[in-house]
Image 1 (tube, helix red, strand yellow):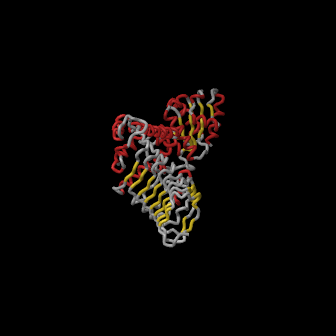
Image 2 (cartoon, helix red, strand yellow):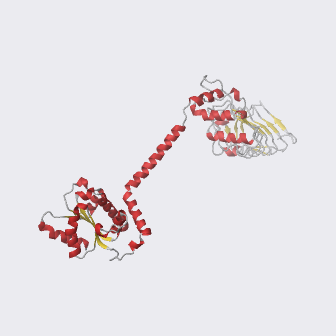
Image 3 (cartoon, one colour):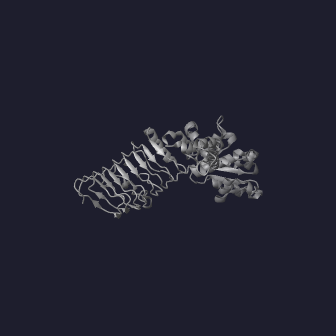
Length: 443
């Protein structure tokens, strides 16, 4: 209860305390409330019915507890003095409720939070201070300033002196740079901070030098923990010459990454080379070789079997295989010397022959394993077996000579493991059985 027309209440050094609880004034006329240097250790509030209050001084109370709603009913407040308290110990200024503390003070122009043992602030703590002109955070424990300033178009002075700032982070410098560009009169004080002068802080030092006109008493800034440099400008010049450039390292790292990616792609391509080749020739045949595809087919296949063999076995194929299978059994065989289309690429001919043959007979000999075209035919047939025919058996292996197991390609070894194969007899007495089994396989 105060007299009706009282505008100022000044009760500093009055030993008031200990908690500033929910308070309702009986008059709306109060404009100035000074309660500094008392014993209010806890600001609970809110302060009600003081909607015309413009000046509030709560400094020097050693307060260590602040609720987020203490200032919520003071829409006209222009000056708020909170220095010489212990608000940094309350954690309210940097937890999830920090944005509510000053959220309704849209008319606030001056805020003093100096000497409060504040070690950090929430990014959005000043988000709605649209009229703020001066903020003092002097003599605290800040190591950085992670606070957005983009909603403060009238801010002209930010005091961060006498803190523990070695260098400002990238976001901090970005937000401060925006304020500098927005207002030519904007000033910031970083004096008496332990500014680090080293290669790791060179970018920050250059930023300081670039915007030195916006920093109060810039010429008095000194490097901490070293007496090598007299001023920050000397430090920038010296460090710029002595610090190693990271451009070469960055380029080297990029080259290593690119090389790694190229090697990885090459490994993937190499491991899938036969599948890629197969799909290439399938696509090529589909879009560019229509005439070949329209040839007469028997049960969707032009040939009963395609013979894959090395040139050293040509006599065996002509005198034995063709005689037994074509002349005697009327099978239609695809022989590369006879049936490949002249003028067409060999690889195209091979893929076409495999695709248009019901079976592929491999005459496996040491010469076969040394022939690149025979191995190509083997791998293309394996792709046909896996992709187009979806595991339907189309391969007949005829082992004609003795072959060491270590010489057998992986694909052939897997086929021989999963499928039965024929071995050409060493004794003529077993010839009849061999040919009967081969004919049955074709049928």
